[in-house]
Length: 390
Image 1 (tube, one colour):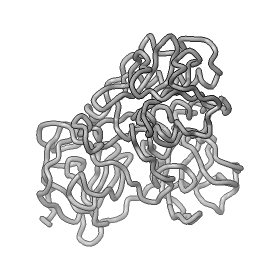
Image 2 (image 1 turned 90 degrees about the horizontal axis):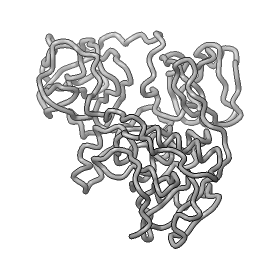
Image 3 (image 1 turned 135 degrees about the vertical axis):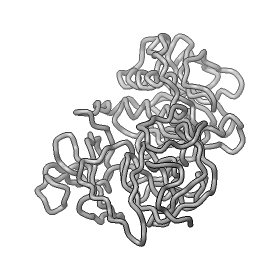
Image 4 (image 1 turned 180 degrees about the horizontal axis):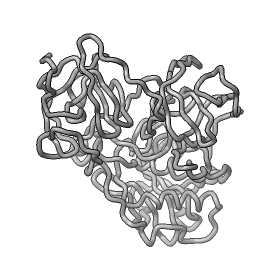
């Protein structure tokens, strides 16, 4: 609920949360196309009471209600929803609540992350990128209501806030005395009766301007661009013909991505390009997110680097796999593999025991860039054959 929002995340190296830790058994000899069964809660059927339950809301506010209600049953995750692009993300331990210890395993939203996502879907603009306190003081407020006014002046889509001095929680009013919220660690996004006692601080109505985010085209994923005068090209090269020019930030539907021409712009360098729904290409520098977009498949243009320095090439498996600067899931993240890829292993050693995706293993591999990857996500036996001990 009290997340401090990170700055713009258009960076060359991803800096994401640690590898999710799940449960039991030893790593099998071959990889499985596994989905982390404890990472996301099974999506409950949309609660019948979650929706626009009163009149008076703008079309934008009604769209925000629909977006928030679409997440019923998703995990509360402290820090969730505060990635480069609004949407569910893995959270992290808040440092005090024991129920938050597993938030790095839960893909979801904290309270402000859910509100940010809802209004992004409703307006096409990232209006509420911040904490609950930031959202309470947002310049996007079209109207404000005191705690003493209760719910009488509220309409669906209004944001309700709690906190004395510093705002620590936010929820969305639905009407009929109901609200939708991401409440606390260990729970799921839910509909509940409004609470106007205690440290209830009042409500805010968000500016209803904007255009709803279109659904992804042709099975793509929607991302937001940044910058002005951004061009897309007919091939993944700045020297190829220009297909389109974006005067300002906009939404694009990304089909796949691949390594191609290296581009340096706006202080960033990246060789990854995204193929858009219209067949044009855009350097990932101008797409909000890490250098390699999470959850986006390879277009087929990658050529894995050859083994070097006595290394051996292996295939990874799984999605959202992270490497670290030490053989420990709590160490700094070096890279993020959105999809299976090829890695070059220099040596391996026994270190921190990791439990993830149904496997337990204490073997870690050191890659040619100095990063470490738990052997759980490398195809093969728990101890890789033919690889020396570090």
